[in-house]
Length: 115
Image (cartoon, rainbow, N blue to C red; front, side, top):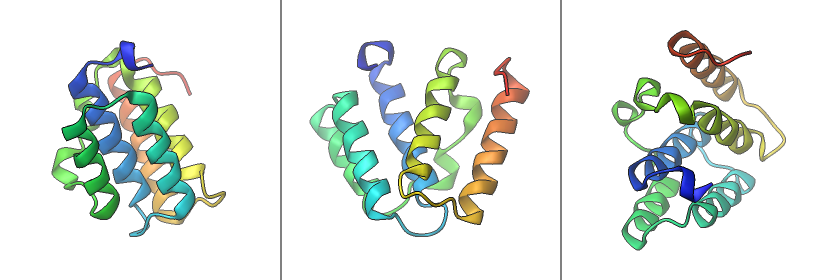
């Protein structure tokens, strides 16, 4: 996966995943662990790792999370990782469910992502 994403897209992916993990206003230990493993898989640079850890402490600014910024070729990957993060704790909070529904709708609207 790391070779498929440029540095800015790796960081963008972590930002999205963290944003969704914070949807219910707290990150569960399982969600936190999922994000930490994703950080490792993405082979983030040290500065980017620091930023990702910060997003585990404080959610990313909502204005920095725009699905239209996701390159078309990476939208399925982003969706898969977001779904993995919110499912990591075995529960889907109403806020997570709604955010995921909206995210899928926006991705489908702006690309040919199949249901």
